[in-house]
Image 1 (cartoon, rainbow, N blue to C red):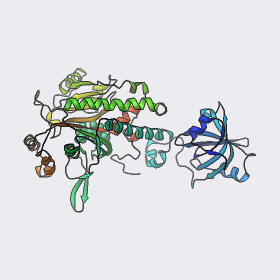
Image 2: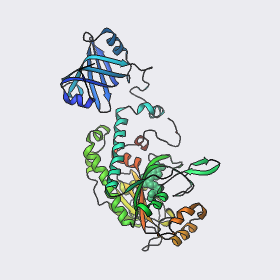
Image 3: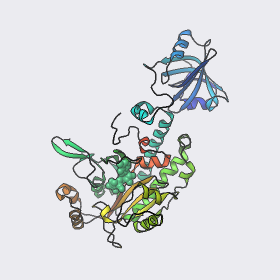
Length: 432
Ligand code: 4AD
Ligand code: MG
């Protein structure tokens, strides 16, 4: 294949002219009247290759004709503009080398969702999953680029721990050389320890939740972005959150139009995601819910139904702040304005996609923290190191946790959170 320039498929399609050598996997194939039409994909796109039986060797023809879908191929040929071909160009094959698959590809057109999850390792090759995974990769980058520009340092917390950050009830136990330890449910406490040297930090790592929730927004393993900022209060943290989420939406809408279109997401809706987001207190949220016919009363937590009622008419995410203290974790300070509540805020995505961020101010005083921990019935011994951080130069601070798969599900308009991650871990599935 000397003399043919190696190109990515998108470049070859755009060139529409000249000699090219491409490689990839067989996406579609048919033959008709001594011609073979092979659509080949690489990570940049697809191109139709047309092989004339008389133009290539008998051996090449035989191999190409027998090739299964998803076989790996390398093709050299001449690019031709052709309005009928997808993308407006095709490749006239001069030579084709096929490394045929061992077996027929098991995924055919109509398959049950369960089967596709069983063969997730292969289903990831589909156009839909490839597009989602590209968007996922880009969103990870957009989040990082925003925080890096704001002067944050990325930190790497331990993921095996003895101290729970949330309820602790939902942690997976690990046998740590004979000691009881857990897979982390949040890296927050470690991020807090690091603000005393780096001031503005974030960890971007998995969190695990052994929740028995079988919903479209719960994973047992998810990617958790957790910024933590010295000297921030709840209001300043909310302002940062809406800018972060708006940045991610804007970059996706601008740079990834083709992906959004392919997965059926609403780019125009994403363009509207700009600060400020609506802020409503928990009290106000309760009023709205009751007006809408909900039977929830003050003190109740929101479930899927309440999140939906609160956001069904919204175009942008909203904050619900100052939640009842009994619903929230030990580290949140009691509000001076309403001591039944704590200085916290959850960000709910529009159209019922649910909570995407949970955040709060943190108690920045040793004695207050100890009192609150006792009130919550925590074993102080388990938090010895964390309490230590408050003994030396404690300052007010705040932080939040953003669930990446929740954001991906919302921004791409996915029905189920499991499609926002390559190999989902849900209650009944830990393979592949
Ligand atoms: O609200 P959560 O439990 O808050 C915390 O863990 C805090 N320690 C975070 C912090 O302040 N650093 O979780 C934060 C976010 C949720 O808003 C949600 O987006 C996501 O994590 N999340 C999940 N995502 C997928 N599957 C699950 N089971 C999730 N549980 C929480
Ligand atoms: Mg929460």
